[in-house]
Length: 247
Ligand SMILES: Nc1ncnc2c1ncn2[C@@H]1O[C@H](COP(=O)(O)OP(=O)(O)OP(=O)(O)O)[C@@H](O)[C@H]1O
Ligand SMILES: [Mg+2]
Image 1 (cartoon, rainbow, N blue to C red):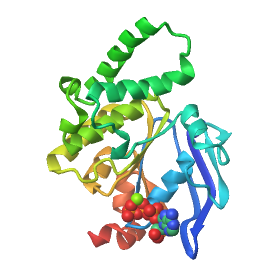
Image 2 (image 1 turned 180 degrees about the vertical axis):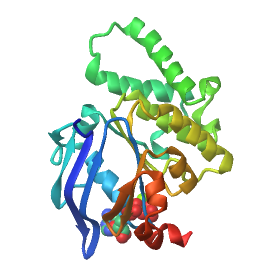
Image 3 (image 1 turned 90 degrees about the vertical axis):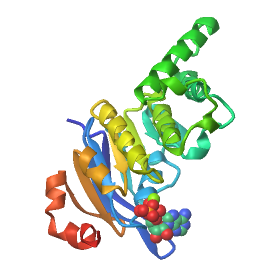
């Protein structure tokens, strides 16, 4: 079975700081793989190298068998890698459904260039509606995006990632800034997506990580010190010492 993502010997320094230190990781098809680690461990830097916004110093990244280390971010997106967008990618003045339709259109720009406009618009709205349904926002479709809560904006980000039909979704702290109830709703949403896409999840919320992950990798000072099932990680002494013990 070809790994969806195969990272070998990845290194990235900022001045004297090794943000990524000989990092090796293999992510299998349709698994939800969580990366945990203390602040500054290099989690976001890893995601940036996978989405292509930062270049590693050395090492290789393979996606579905193809070496993508030198490939530009937009080409990686086209190959099927989606990074969860920051809140600023939503256009607050537009309606909820129009934000999703825009994302669908951007994706279609690559794949269905010749679709007839009128039919295209109807089906675009239907597809946007079905994505909003999947993230639990169908009843908010026609509201202004600005009227939604922070948690609902996070759900819209997931809908936008889903719009790209990406094989690999890179999610950098989707629960950040969410309260207990909104976090629980995000866990439910991700449980629903799980198994249909390959997901690399970075998250500080340990309850969420242990509820969602098939496997967990622990990153400390840019290096993965352990990879395993939630049970294996929970009982791993090096992990307890380096990270979980702090909590
Ligand atoms: N553009 C940059 N220039 C200089 N140093 C950087 C840059 N980006 C990250 N770093 C440093 O690299 C290290 C890893 O940072 P990174 O943001 O990847 O950590 P993180 O695990 O995502 O942390 P957090 O949990 O706080 O989000 C840190 O020491 C950080 O200060
Ligand atoms: Mg980060």
